[in-house]
Amino acid sequence: MVFPDRIERTVEIAHPPSRVWAALTTAEGLAAWFGHEATIDLRPGGAAWMRWTDGSKVHMTVERAEEPTVFAFTWPVYGLPDGDPRRTYVEFTLEAAGPGTRLTVVESGFAQLPEDAHGKAYDGNVQGWARELAELVDYLDAA
Amino acid sequence: MPPDAGATGAPAAQATDGAVAEAIAEQVFVALADPSRRAILAELAAAGAATATDLAARLPITRQAIAKHLALLAEAGLVTAEPGERRRVRYRLRSAPMRVAQQFLAALARDWDGPLAALQNHLDREPSH
Image (cartoon, rainbow over all chains, first blue to last red):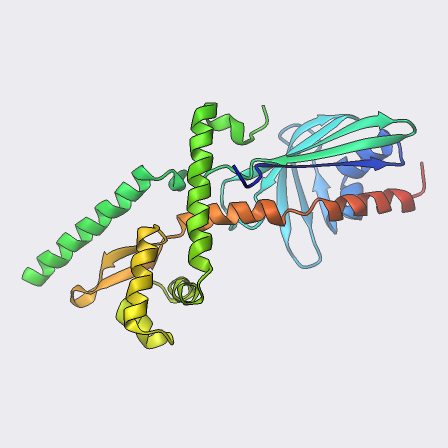
């Protein structure tokens, strides 16, 4: 696979995990660096959203909240139309590194396929409809 | 388990799916690399299904060239042919391959470097508690 399913970054932050955790998992923290406005219900299954000044908004679902080491959520795949059911999974891992924190973010699931891209069943159905419509046209033409 | 791509099947099935997705995306990118095909796809997206004659009337492309491009696009699964009025074939945009290609673009467009730099700046500015 040439295109990535998974994107990973690690940064060293000169602040302890407790402060990084607060910035990642509170509405105030998220609104300060990521979104413009945010809410979060910090528990697995909890809902969160972020909104930006351009009016865009993203809804997230908290998947893991294990203070102060793992915070994870799912959100819609960037660029796909509203209502597309596919979501990527974002996981932040915090490790103490001296007085600071080693923060790793992994986003995975970019290579999921939509159900209707699996091919044959869908295409067969489309061709079936095209044939049915052709028969309808023939029928109407003959009438 | 997190709902990542591994949740849907055995490794062999994933490899097949990945190859299928990549082949589908490649066809979309090849189609979009040609300005005439971009114009045809854009017109079908904007105004709905159309015959080759309709498209020739609306675009600065000969009907013959449009027919050739439509045949290629249909072969690639990017448009579907359906019966239209007066027994003319109408072509409709098929969106499923576009969504596969969008997903590849989404991975390339995802920017974590910007937000992570903003996080570091935020923590540096914020007074310690």
